[in-house]
Length: 346
Image 1 (cartoon, rainbow, N blue to C red):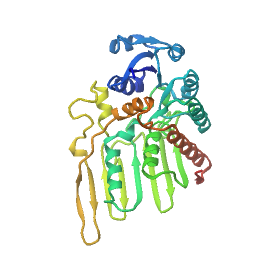
Image 2 (image 1 turned 90 degrees about the horizontal axis):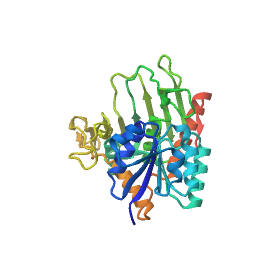
Image 3 (image 1 turned 90 degrees about the vertical axis):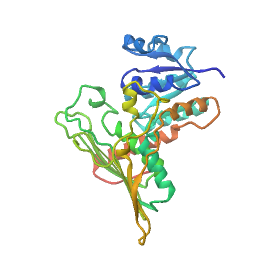
Image 4 (image 1 turned 45 degrees about the vertical axis):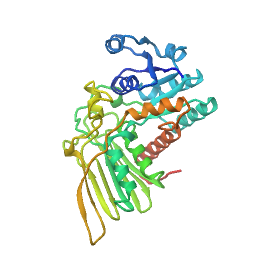
């Protein structure tokens, strides 16, 4: 099969930093069109790529896969157009604003036998891959508590759509999508959800704080994010019947992409050793403590998986069904915060 031709809608932060360079670095994919309101910015990096509007890109005969990296409120309508045009679709996270919208897209993709996926790239973060391996190894025993924190220090509200009073804006849809997806990958669907979602910064018009608990019976999974955290605590904190794992720092791939580096560069995805996690495990009679070297991050695995899935050579790397569950958790969290009660997850 020839190269899969890709059209990218949106060349803002997500499109320019993540999608375009990762697509360009993936053997088997070829970026043919980009829809952007800033054609000159695109041409400086991709002079050979046609710059069009979204409608023309979706109709184009030289596009097999449409990647949507637009503001969240446009995800559903653009994905519907692309699927109806018989194109495979990748959506930037979050999938959609509502679960009903997500279910509509899942049904249409299945009906047309098209690949539909969501870019939950932090499944390939160095720290998450290490935590998942640590849990799977059994070193920590039966997990009773897991905390995933995504804190930042951004005390000033910025003039960008993610921080405006718009459907799908705010940190729960943004950072929360990552943490929820990671929790679901580690532990499956919860039984109950409770959450507080709030705006803490002066002048904030969308949520910049959340504290969410996913209840699995004895096991509790806590997801937290704040925008006024000058000194962040552990990114992951996992406790089990036989030990604990504590991990600071954040995956280096986003910063590397912002500097113009790409997969294949020396030491790609490898974390600074000072951020390697601390593990303590063993039975009562024998305690072993030390540093656990982080696995290398691998954002390139996502688009390699998309290439394989379209060719029929492997599963979709992030299924639309998985991404739908993330939106359901977000809806439950918002309802819990609004009504001040625990919400059964079904």
